[in-house]
Length: 106
Image 1 (cartoon, rainbow, N blue to C red):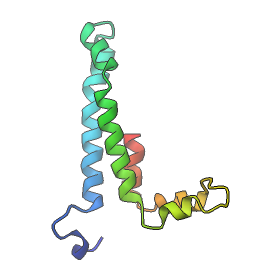
Image 2 (tube, rainbow, N blue to C red):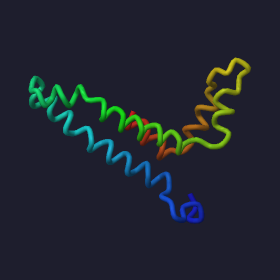
Image 3 (cartoon, rainbow, N blue to C red):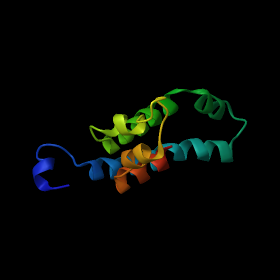
Image 4 (cartoon, rainbow, N blue to C red):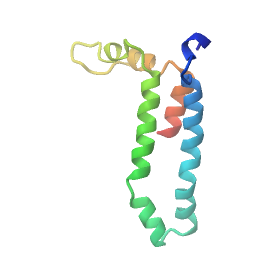
């Protein structure tokens, strides 16, 4: 992205990099408890909570949003049957950094 597009806002690459880091670090306590104390009550409560899934799902959706262009929806559903088509999906994932970050979060 050019500097003129980033005035006052973080670039999508910076947001994707931050999301990658946050997504990686945020799951570590869950994995640690599942490995170290899988039967402990705290582990059961952590795993049963929907909050981490909602947060990571929101981050994932935002990263997908950053990958979209104004024509993305039109390209994805270009067929007369309104079924997704591969060229449209490829366009949605045309930003390498945000695509990789969203795949990692997923």
